[in-house]
Image (spheres, rainbow, N blue to C red):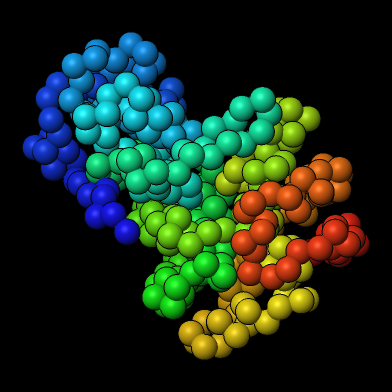
Length: 310
């Protein structure tokens, strides 16, 4: 595993970032970013001067992924400093770039995409809506569960995942800045192993749900949060891997399931079900589904359609 990215404080960013610096921030973070980062700010990546030595990006996973790709293609020798506006995606420490092309999720994986450093700005959390914080916690939970249970995970990664799960069980699903560090660790864990059906469904359905329900906030974190409980219950029907793992690592299964239940939203799940049924074969073919910790079959769609998770 690469030793990037370094975790910097705001003072360290000011000391260690090479000059000249360019900042690109999402609209929701722009005012705070301008107050705390006294450098030139740009509204688009294309506006950034080509002599930029350090690109600082402030925002969510999609903006950070765009920054990774821009830096890779146009500023390969520059530093990239990522400042997440929300926990969950872990894009600030990940070697993965996710984009949407022709209505489908596309992936690129390269250690060159990993930012050189990442910074936590607690001020960004103050105006964060509670529901987005909630979804971000669910996103982190989906990463640690699927990463630790993946058939590609080493024993070392499983032990790391168990320790992280125990810490997450003691951290409320709330606007707690501890989630920045927890989600970063969860993302690094899953990027060193793989994910599974939760992500297979999320990546298959997100573009469809955004188009069908544009006002309902369907994004990756919301999907992952809602899917944890039903997917884990499906997997427990055919595999004892989660229960064996939890027992071996002294994880309180009842407490964990209580968290998954708190993340579940029955109304939203009912909204996604028709799309899940219509796209089930695509979900089965998704490479992420193929590394699920339990076998996923064509008939399993009936479990989601028939089961009451409330």
